[in-house]
Every structure is written in C-alpha cells, then in structure tokens.
Image 1 (cartoon, rainbow, N blue to C red):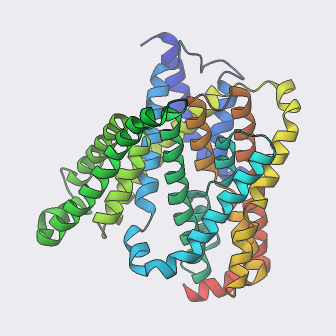
Image 2 (image 1 turned 180 degrees about the vertical axis):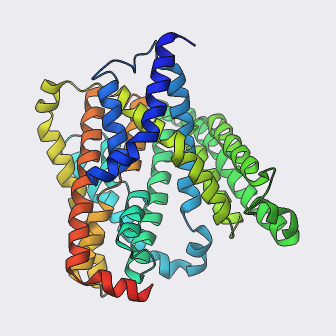
Length: 399
C-alpha cells in the first residue's frame, strides 16, 4: 500500500464514523454529507481521490456499491407484491411507468442522454423510508402505500437500467451482432428464474436447514456467509452476461427476498454491515471522483435547475393517480415529493452511466448536485405537508 493510499484510507474510514453525527445536526440525509465530504477531500478539493492514491478506497467503494444494491433488493417485499396479484400492482406499476415516460420525454425534448432521463425518473426506497420512520408513520396505511410505490418503482428502474447496460454492449452492431449480447444477458436472467424455483422448492421441503440462515443468533453466521456468497455468484453471472456486474448484486437481493420470507434478522445484519461501513465509503468515494469546477458548475446551472424541475414534474402523474384513488391532495403531493428524491439510485445510475461512457464527468457532477439538492428540498417540503395535514396523528393511531 502506498503512503497516499494509507492517508486516504484513514481519512475516509474516520469520516464514515463521524459524519452521521454531523448529518443529524444539519438535519440532512447522511448520504448527502458523505458525498459532500468526498468532494472536499477528492479531486475537487484536497486531491486524495487521485488515481495513484485511491485504489484501496475505490475497491472498498465498489464493495459498498454492491452491498447497497444487494440490501436494496432484499428490502423489496417480493412475496407480498406477488401475492397481491396484478390488480394490486397496477397502481404502483402505472406510477413508475408514467414517471419514467415523462422523464424520458423531457430528457429527449431537452437533448439529454437517456441515462439522464433514467436518473431523473428513478425511484428509490431508502430516503423515503428514512423520512417516514423519522415522522413515526412507517406503519400507517399511507406510508405503506408510499413504500409500495417506491419499491415497485425501484424494481422497474433497475430493470430499465439493466436494459441500458445490454444496449451499451449491443449498440453499433448489426442485428446478428446484437443477438450475442442479448443471449449473454439472458444468463443471469435464467439463473435467477432457476434459482428462485429451486431454492423456493428446497425451502418448502427442507425448512430446517434454511431456518439457520435467518437465525438471530448463529455463532458461525451461516446466513451472512450464504448471502454474501450468493451476491458474489450473481455479480459473476452478470459479468458473464455482459452487463454491469454490480447489478447482479441487486438480483441476488431480490432472490433472497423472494426465497426467505422470514429474512428480517439476516437483512438487519447485512444492512448493518453495509450501511455501517461500506456504503458510506461508496458515497464518499463518489464525491472524491467528482471534479467540480466552479465556473463549469455555474455554466451548468440551467442543466441543474432543469433536472431539478423535471424530477418533480415526472412525479405529477403519480400524484394525479393517487388523488384519483381517493387519497387527499395534500397526501398525494407529499408522496410525489418523496418520490422525487431518489438520492441513492440517482447516484447509482449516474455512476454506471459514467462508467459506460454515456455521461461525461462535467454532466456527472451536475447530476450529483441535482441529487443532493432534491434529497434536501423535496423531503423537507413533504415533511411539512405531512405534519400540517394532520397525517401524523392519524398515522400514529393507525400504527
């Protein structure tokens, strides 16, 4: 390990411990503070994110990204969604599709890359869940509806993101040449279907061995080992399929969610490990890689404001759909605002788009700025609406 790598490792790991306290005092999401800290110490600031000095931090950040997607997949209640049937899924699916359609149309009209359209229309669970938990209404019917919208939207976003990855490898080729990357992409799909069928059958016939995987107290932590091994397996299968390997981690999380209904103890352990250390390093490392030039950022201010506005505009159809189902206008607006702050997935989409060469570094910096602004502005407005609209007392009673 080089001296520069050692310095970067010490600074980043110390920040992963100290920054949550700063985020609480500032009343902003901790991921925002971590990204801003990375900007300060990285290429735009002290220069600890240089190519020659950041290999260890980048490796830990990639692992954090994989764990983030893995845990995000586990958080989606796949079994509950499938049990509700097509009718129950129609509402969240319509909201997710209309959001992406408006985002893509807006991006196309403004001459943006489709990757930016996906970033603007992305839907994510973590920040919404954090706000609802903070307000004490996570178990209320309205909150559960919001989380369902976010969960289905996140799943749709990841599916579209995977399709983007396939198209990156197939672009520019003939129809015959596109067959190969498409068939390769079916490798993780086939593995997912086969794994879901086989593992669900095994859990049904042999519940005893699988109960150890979700045990609260297991000296050997077999569940942790199996979960991380499954994540590594699907990361490898995604690489064989010619798509972004880290998307395999999300698929592995979905598979765990589908197979293990009583997985919450295992999910808690993995989330504690991920968000306690590795995911913060990923967000810090994202900020370290961003090269923010004040003059360029000022020149990109129209792009920043346009993305911020389109991010909210894309959620208008979701708000209208919610009102049409009987939700109060105030509650529907709050839900739309919370859906407009998909901080984690915006960062993920922009990061993958930059790796694919579809988003230049300057645009990446602008998009990350938008993600940070949206994650501060829109949840703050949603909190005010939920509190002033007397949603909070009713929700607490319902819980």
